[in-house]
Image (cartoon, rainbow, N blue to C red; front, side, top):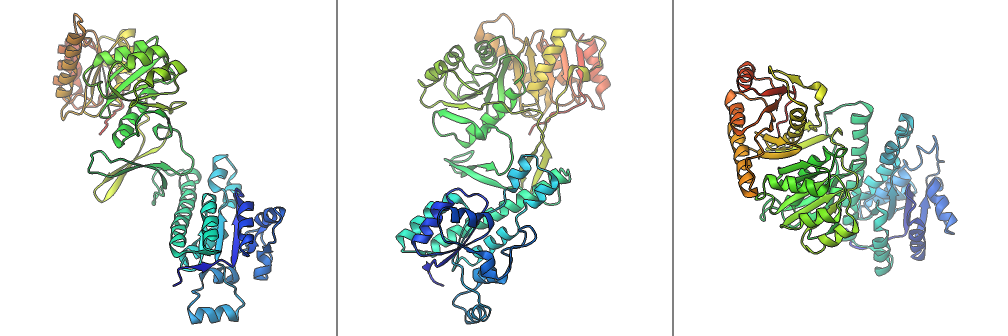
Length: 530
């Protein structure tokens, strides 16, 4: 196996012509024979380069609207031959097969064709066959052949040829081969995804062909002894926290990304409403509020739990102004996320050098479809996103007393927040702000008690005469299996309840609500979050 291989003949067939002319000139400068097809050959000739048509090499014309042009032994024999194998060499000589030392291929723009809404026939026609075949042949035989699939590698290839007087090293060819097999894997995955999801409308195909590209390595994972990286989806996808612009601050950590995603997902529920602010700690909201201005929304969200907000993540649904930025920088905050921030706000944040300011642009659609994936020992759990939402019209009043308009508004607000709280989740809300949040307990009663205790603590710290749970609405992410959780809410001062219903003890729970004079509505939808 040779380490250095002199490049004497190159086959170029590219859909993306970026950098092609410069590459062709560099290859010609090293005396490399250029063999090419169709539009690539035309582009090279227009750059003033001598090009041999692949049909001249094979002795067969391109046919069937270009579907058949490189699928020929004189191409693949030249790519796959083991040069120092006597039988391979004899076969090459007997059949007039010349070696090909370099292949430059990028494939038909399948994903782009799908993304622009092309017809099914056009999508099918943009499935490349000859390209991937050449890529795989060249990559398999990287002991002798260099394969370039990414125009971003042209500069490195030219540099290698200039440095080595027209030769490539085995290490470089091995690197290129790894990228080539990854490129064909991604390409085939895009095709399989389209057939499964777009063409056949499947949610859970027999094979789930997902592909991702590393966006960046992270300092460490959830804990310092764990390694981590951020990966981005390949192909059409929506924008989210991974695509946000980081204006300032330290590099984002694994936990920053996780918490910031939770904050962005929740604040997006309010993207079309009044100014709203979400404060998150350890992927759970600790304060959420809507108000006439961002600064008022932030102050109301912060008042819900001033202790947990320290070192938290703030997300808002409107561009940040100076007043909001000034309020947000009064305590230590890890990350602030907003659609945008004006110049005055950016200047205020700049005083906090370590604070990460992320600008998301348009907020994600909370009702968008999609899949979520969770690794378990020996497999993965895949489900559709929890994009369920309830409207006022969908609610069913099950108590003797119906909620007042304000109670109903607080019920819907608390319900929206509870969807994003780890189960078991209890959320008290009043006047468009959370009053107390109980998250992640093993039973619903304890979550109700913790949320009420947090509300009392907040009132004490703020100097209020009473906790905001008095006259509040309470949301439960799942049904009350017993009346005790509901009674804890009564004790905290709640006057209205929103919950899914569906327990075998619903009648018992409803009777307890009636006895306490509560108004209770059921959604028929659960929002477990683990």
